[in-house]
Image 1 (cartoon, rainbow, N blue to C red):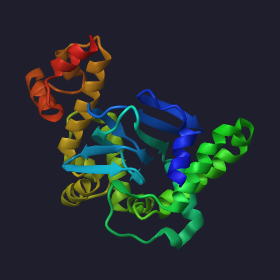
Image 2 (cartoon, rainbow, N blue to C red; image 1 turned 90 degrees about the horizontal axis):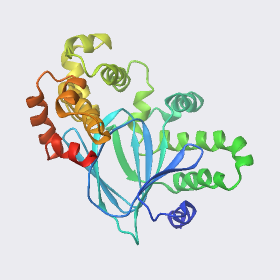
Image 3 (tube, rainbow, N blue to C red; image 1 turned 180 degrees about the horizontal axis):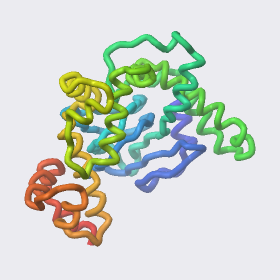
Image 4 (cartoon, helix red, strand yellow; image 1 turned 30 degrees about the vertical axis):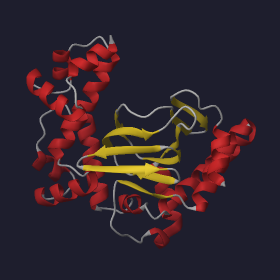
Length: 287
């Protein structure tokens, strides 16, 4: 079985963490369940080799298991938690960033062959096809010969992008490449929010900046992110705040102001609501 061969190629998985395996492919390892991981998922593909993981974004929670491949098309603030893992059978997931320019190049070569659409999700999971598993395995095998890898890595990575684009769960990626599609417009809005999340959000202005009416923008924003623009901005702020607090050398008040809050008490309430514990608990964890 290809999954078994991939696990064998990954090698040592006795310690939790993340390490690069070959080219732009890495492996995430967790040897026990529990804990939360709050971060911003940029476009990526994630192939689950072992274990189970729950990921929450907006008002949705998705559970993925062995053999599932996740395709993320847009920047999403998420809270992820491994629910099944052990030292004997750790959670393992291969991760590859999705290059939108590479995806567009593949799309241009395919033409109308990749234009079929259906209901789409920005975080979409489905069982990996045999072709996708085989391509992951060949990408991972590049670690065996660095000389060959310099020539073959761009070719195999391009093939991976073909698999992502044509996968059953690749609809949002296909929509993202269509000129003036709502998926593309929302992606542009998320880029603005990502760079300006500390400032006051004027939703009408943001909608206008990507050529959408306010009502259409709200509707399609929720379709992509499973949340509202205001809540998305809050999630960006709180995710950045948690990273700063865990990093140490920051007080709760200074972090609140740093990420754009005017009231530390409001920040503490919203932080506790999102992460299930007050920000002081993460200050303590960092010290």
